[in-house]
Image (cartoon, rainbow, N blue to C red; front, side, top):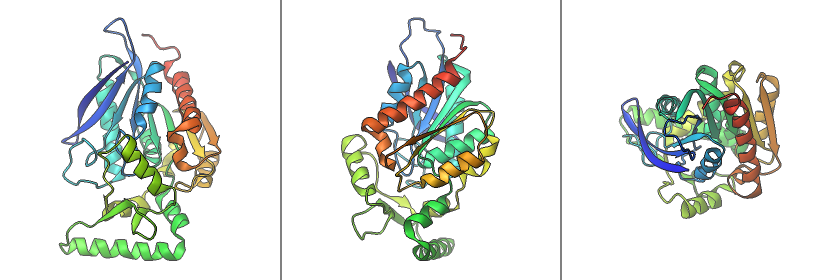
Length: 306
């Protein structure tokens, strides 16, 4: 395969990406395509190339992107996560990929994980250019995930902090940042005991450009975010949801419930008896990527004229 660094415009901002192109003998050969992006605060290098390589080996031109404000992408509001802006980055990446000479514009899928597992649900509900979706360990509703991790009393105090921050920002206070992960007792966005060691190891192994900060405003966006609200509108686009049944970050029961009660056919649910971060390495990665690869092959490659 060939790997290229690319850049695409998203509402006036240059966003960075890595493009994985399968081997071909004829320069005009076209393949189905997949757009990928990462989750909460993460950059494209954080284990996503492992997935992209598998997809490209299966004959899918695969684009991994950095959202605006993160990684190698431009953006004046560094480390600020607005899910609606990130969704626009996904959709603009689809536009860019659909114009690539080696891509079949009518055979493009999207893949997301964790926070972006929620993004792809929203993109798939409104963008009919998308012909297949894989949503892995997805955020279903930010409030539910936060309250489950914090407890109701801590959640109440956290919301009060967010409101105070909003009031202060309106009055002209500077942007406040918090750590994504911290050691025991350190104030941070991710407090699950598996989070700090995973993020730390990830940064050391594959993504030294990841920054352990987000704006506090990002957390307000997170708790307000309900990407599964329109999951019933995804059909007839095929949807695969991959759930880690021991997930302590994005509650698996919420994902399974909305999949069973709201999502419509064609759909497939994959349950992996592991935790949230296990999907990026080892046997659980192997199972997750194979399920996603097979789903894309079934719904993007069958009947393709190349």
